[in-house]
Image (cartoon, rainbow, N blue to C red; front, top):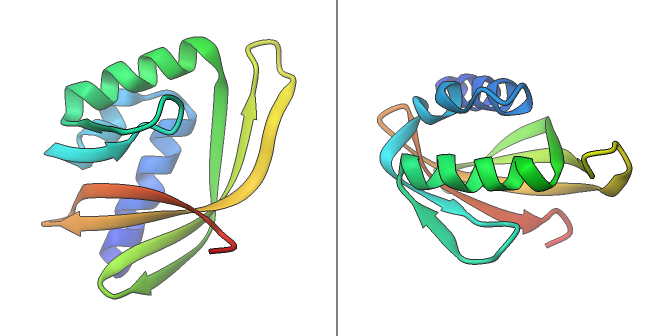
Length: 117
């Protein structure tokens, strides 16, 4: 799990500074990613790029990992999620869980769930 945690910490660092390429290189080419804004899923690195590009034109999200745990071979990351509008007003401030399925040292899938689940 330690190697997975290292990959995920790197992914969060890249995401929070808007380095899309830095995060995408940590994902499987056919990654499955939740579309938290519009619902459903996006599939593949380029679809994730397009999704985040749209997202960052509308809001300014920041996710800070607060803890990592193993759950049946998946890595659960407790994150503090703060979403601001483009003027800096906080729209959402909450703790959620990101549940990752890893494959060969890369992110295969990410699921989002309420940390109270």
